[in-house]
Structure formats: C-alpha cells, structure tokens
Length: 199
Picture (cartoon, rainbow, N blue to C red):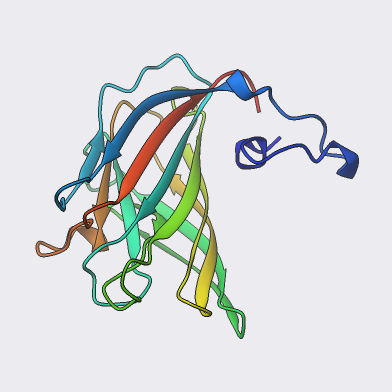
C-alpha cells in the first residue's frame, strides 16, 4: 500500500485494498513562511514512533528557472560516503524524460515554482519517507511533485535513496542545492506527518 495513495482516497475497487483510516496520519510539525523568505526549512527532533513519514509542500523559490529542484539533507549529513541516489521520470504534456543521479549534498525530493514562473504560482508535492526509524535499512524517499503555469507546467515522479541505516531524526530542506543566494519565498508552506502502522 502506498502512503501517497493513502492520503488521497480509496481505490479498493482497483485491487489495491482498503486505505488507512484518516487518523493513520498525525501532524508532527509545519513551517509557514508567512512574512519572510528562508534559505532553509528544518524539521528536527522527529519522533521515532511512526512507521513512515510524509512531507507535503506548496512552495516557491527565487531560483531563476520556472520549476527548480529542491533537496532534503538527512541528519545534517553531507559526509563523503553518505550518498544520496535518485531516479526520476517527468513530463510536461508534450515530452517526457527520465534519468538518475547521485551525490552527497542531499536527496532531490521535489520541485517548487521559481522566479521564472508566473507571479503567485507555487509548486506542490508530497514525499513519503519509508522506514525512517528502522536502523536495519537504507532510507527510501518517494515523491510526486508538479506545478501549473497558466496552461503549461510539469509533473515529476521521483525515487530517492539515502545510503545509511541511521534513523532519521532531522530533515533540512534546501533550495537549489543550497546555493548561497537561493531561498524559499514568502507564503511557502511545508508540513511533516507521521504515518502509523505498516503500509
């Protein structure tokens, strides 16, 4: 069962089984940039009592492109050997592409609207972080993200992997691979949820 699908509604008729009841998700923390921009957004002291985590966002950055990437740094780690891997597939209505990458700066979990997009457009997305407290597994990130720019836009499906078995206790969100002049813009909103039980 996919926690992403759990958050949308029932598709039992299609053979995926019944969904979790609404109280399977518990709010852990939110971050709203109501009056200012911010170079980073951090969720720290994450409880270790859930099966999985889910991050949701509606956000914009000052990156020059229309639909820039953003990243999650786990436990503040950019240590050599603590590698992040990514596979993605994306489409914009006229073409599609896919690829993979790796690095140490953070796992690419989604996209937001950038300064190249129309004014007041925000990117949205949801990311499942599976088995985040399990110290016997590397950590998997699974995201669906996109935006509409008044008739054109993009949608991306991502699968990321953090090669370390340490439990996740903090997640730092960084725009544009933490370029010094980049930031999440005013009215961006991020929310972290805990998912109970097995998915």
